[in-house]
Structure formats: structure tokens, C-alpha cells
Amino acid sequence: MNPRSNPGRRRAVLLSAATAGMVIAAGMAAAGTAEAASTLGASAAQTGRYFGTAVAAGRLGDSTYTGILNREFNAVTPENEMKWDATEPSQGRFTFTNGDRILSQGQSNGSKVRGHALLWHAQQPGWAQSLSGSALRSAAINHVTQVASHYKGKIYAWDVVNEAFADGGGGGRRDSNLQRTGNDWIEAAFRAAHAADPSAKLCYNDYNTDGINAKSTGIYNMVRDFKARGVPIDCVGLQSHLGTSIDSTYQANIQRFADLGVDVQITELDVQQGGNQASIYTTVTRACLAVARCTGITVWGIRDTDSWRTGANPLLFDGSGNKKAAYTAVLNALNAGGTTPPPTTPPVTPPTTPPVTPPTTPPAGNGCTAGVSLNSWNGGYVATVRVSAGSAAVSGWTIGLTLPSGSAVTGVWSATNTATTGAVSFRNVDYNAQIPAGGYTEFGFQGTGAGPTATPSCSVG
Image 1 (cartoon, helix red, strand yellow):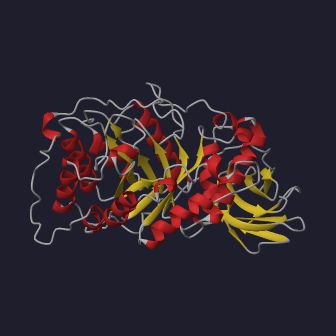
Image 2 (cartoon, rainbow, N blue to C red; image 1 turned 60 degrees about the vertical axis):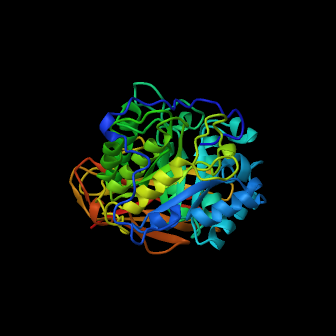
Image 3 (cartoon, rainbow, N blue to C red; image 1 turned 90 degrees about the vertical axis):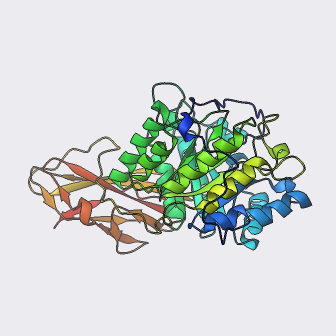
């Protein structure tokens, strides 16, 4: 993350010492490179991956900067231009000028575009910082919905939530105004993003997660839970702002996330300059190539003078735009190849749905009941519906709801629907048809206008 202000904040970039065997000599020539590509993006593409960079809209007028950008990279990430303070400076008033400029640049160059970042505790506009509780939750979900909807179908992957876990040994959540809206805020953000742009890959992104440690394990446990419950998460971003060493479990950490059925993306790579800078860059590149679901690498800036890490000279080009030894090391590693290309269709894990809201009183006998809770904002809402079984198990259920005039369903998860306006019915999907006696399941939907307020009907079978 490249903060627009206070760039020296909170990076604990010095990771645990690397084992000697992990460091690869920077000048190593690529094996079997008879048709070796001559640029980073082209060489990454040989294994179905991307090699991208963070882009600042204000530097697109610099011919040296854009020359390297257009030549070397096949993916772009906006540094600040799609963050909350940039896209919604006052509540309900959205501006996308600079984000659109970076999008257009990427599209014109045939590059993937990563969206960064929908929700983050930092770089919130002042009006959002003044909110709390349900007002902040509604504003945050509306922000996710509006920004993801604006870029629908144009963004390869979104960093939906950024840096929500705390540093230290606990592996728990960071205390923030967003966290204080409820522990399910991350899940709500992912569901809203998926409803707004179903084709985008949805990522959780964080720093100091470059090896197997308490923080990365906390994130791992969240992702595992999300996958088990059908929360739409597709990838994990490892920022990898590195110092003069790299954790010996770097590749193993990538692999364990991949084993959960999500992609891994190296999202903000930079390495402090020193005698082993090229070797660390090589280690990161080879680690990604070794794991089929590691789909790409993004360096956080182009030239050393563009970096937020003032004085660290952590990038692949010097301030004049000349290639550094680290550049050659990365290119050689990419041309040496790795695993087969990443899968295009991730495996589907049938989810279950444990509770996230207080249970309703189960009905007596063989019936079912349903209740609805809303996260609403001006012009839209997300509804969570709980379906509860009575004293007998339920095998299949249908929920009936009448939407207010002007309301329309725009997205549904963990159910199928028969209409989008007026009288709408929702039917179970395969994995949540069975509800044990006294138990319950949940599904959700997003809509425009006002959400439903009447008690839903529930029928069994």
C-alpha cells in the first residue's frame, strides 16, 4: 500500500532471515531460453501469469515512466486513484476521473487492471471517518457497490478489503471504525462486491504476511471459513514489502493459501536495495512460478524515485529509468519458467452456512420460518434471510417476499430467485436444502430502492 501521506508509516519490512539455500544468484542465466521473452510482462505471460506495476495517474505525462510502463508490464494497479477518499470525497458524490484514466491506459496496452482498494481503515474521506455503527456499515457497503458497479466487467481483480488484520502474535483483526461495525463487515463487503461485479476476482490484501506467521494464519483461517460457507472470495494478496531478507516459508505460505482453492497474487512487491536485492526478487519470482495458483506479481512502482519507500531504492529501475540487476534477475527467472499455467476455473467447494445473526425462534412441528435483516443506504440495501426449521428436519424450502414499489433484486447468493420485483420467491440451492431439526441456514440478496420489511413466508418441500 502506497499511502498518499506519511509514507514511512507502519511497514515492518524486515522479515525473518532467509535460509541460505533459498537465495538464488542474481546473475543466473535462464535455462532453455531459446525463445526467451525480452520484457517482464511477455515472459510472465509464457506461463499464463502477469507481471504488473502500480501506476500513479499524475505520472502518466512522464514519457520515461510511460515508456517503461507500456513496454514492460501487462497488468496495472492504481496507487491511490480508486481508494475511498479519491472516489467518494463527499458522501454519495462519486468521481472516477483518475481511476478511469489508469483503466484506459491499461486497456489501451492490453493489460489486466487490478482495482485497489474498496475498503481500508486508512485513506477514508473525512465524512466516513466521522461515521460509526450502522451508518458507517451502510455507507461502506454502498461505496463498495457503487465503485464496483462503475467498473463492472473492466477489472480483473479487486482488493476488496485491505489490511484488516493486526500485527503481532495474536492473529486477530485490527481495531478500526470498520471492524467496530461488526465482525462480519469483511464478509459483507465481499458479498456486495460480488453482487456488483460477478466477473471480477475478489481478493483480500495485507502486509507482513510473507511467511507462515500468526498474522498470515489468522487470514488463512478467515479464508478457509469463507470458502466453507460460500462467501465469494477468489484470491489473497501478499504485499511483500521486503527488507534485506525473506522468510524461509514464503513459498509454503503461498502454497497453503492455494490449497484452500483461492489464487494468490503478489500485489505490492518491492525490496530494499542491498547486496541481495536481486536474489530476493528472484526468490519471490520463483516461489510464485512454483505454485500453479500464484497468478501474478505486481511491483509497487516503476523507478526508485517513484517508490513510497524513500531512500530504499526498492524497485527494478533506477531513477533515470535504467534496468537494475534485480530486473535482469527477475526476467531470467520468469524466462526459466515454472509450473503449468494457473487454472482458469477454480474448484468449487460446496459451502455451508452457519449463523451470522441472532437466531429466530424455531417453529413448532414440521414447518419453517424466516426472518430478514437489512443493511440499507440511500438507494439500495443488502438483505440477509435466515430460514429456520422446526422440531423436524427440513428437506428443501421456499421463501416468499414482497418487495416495496421501486425495489429490485440485483444479486442473490446461496439461493435462486424467480423474479426481481414485486412478489419474489427464493428457493434453496443443493448445498443448503437440508436443515436439521431446530437448525437454520441463511441466504442473501442485494437490491436497489428500499428493502423488504414484512416477515417472509416459508414453505417446506
